[in-house]
Image 1 (cartoon, rainbow, N blue to C red):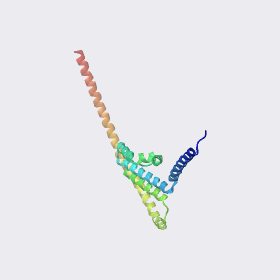
Image 2: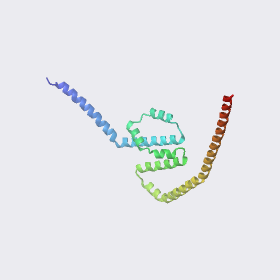
Image 3: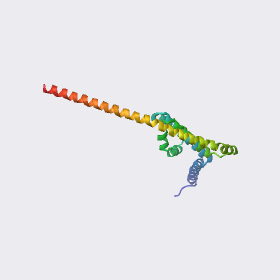
Image 4: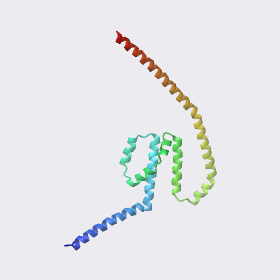
Length: 187
């Protein structure tokens, strides 16, 4: 025999419930408010990860904090895909790079938000000064790098010289020990 009316109604109710759940999940995923919330959370995680990377927090501490977080898996996957490895390597242990990355992050966030009339007027007034400052900062950074290069080369040369001297001393000690061992073996 076929299914009864009650069984059909129960199956239909279950299907409606499943479909309703799926539509709610799709609506939540596509909701502009939720999209912005996920983006804000991703930016916050990237900023925290970058800060921890630059300031030297260990991987274990970072992992334990990430494990304790209750962020959605999709948002974590988005943030991982968006985080460029080059920025992480460039900014590690470099406060100036951290400042530049923070400035760039601010620009990205500002680009996501709509511009107001006051902001447009202020930007028009400040743009020449900002360009001049950025150029001066770039020149200053380049000068600093050029000033540090000779000291770094000298330090490398000292380390090489010390390593060569140590290797020579170890070689002499090894030869002396071999001679003593050969003399003792002859006796």
